[in-house]
Image (cartoon, rainbow, N blue to C red; front, side):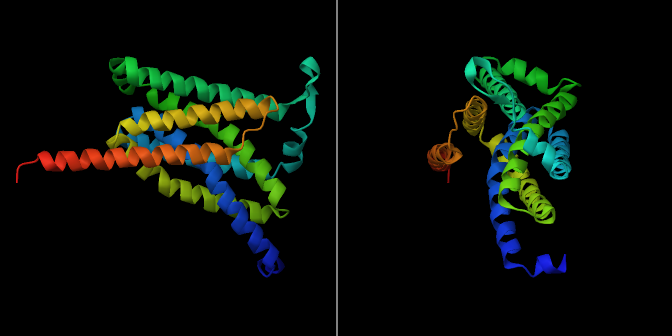
Length: 243
């Protein structure tokens, strides 16, 4: 361990891997914010904490099963001559789940606001949200750990990077959820982001890789435009207030 701390290459791997884990964690933070948006404030905060704890647990557990993770990339079936691995099937399933959830939430926001309110009050809402978080955590954890295995050789470095990244996610999840709650129009933007990520996961599963950087850049541009709209709306409301 002392030798590892004195190794510049290990520190470089830690910084690089932590940065990538934080970027990969953006998807998880947005999903947590959207999924818990239907819950009362206290339960939403509890669900976010539980979700991030699960994310950390899944990632650390998978790091101790690296050989099994690597084996998931081996083809198990070859429909139409295209090899498909367990990892591909997980990505396809997770992507379809994200698409289903994003489309369902968009439909609620646009067409069925009364139904959305009723679901927020349902006693089983907390358990349902936690269950959804568990499913998505498994998918995102798999993607995260495969990235970690490719960038670092020491399990200690991987675990440290994962802990740091989840810590950043924990700090960011609350403010992101609060921002979405205060500005309802941004929820549609977040749902569109999840829809794109779902499509990207399905594409990866069937062998067509979509570079995440392009998706993040497009969503960052859309978020910047939405930010300008929010500022313009706030300025108009301030102008209408009597002196």
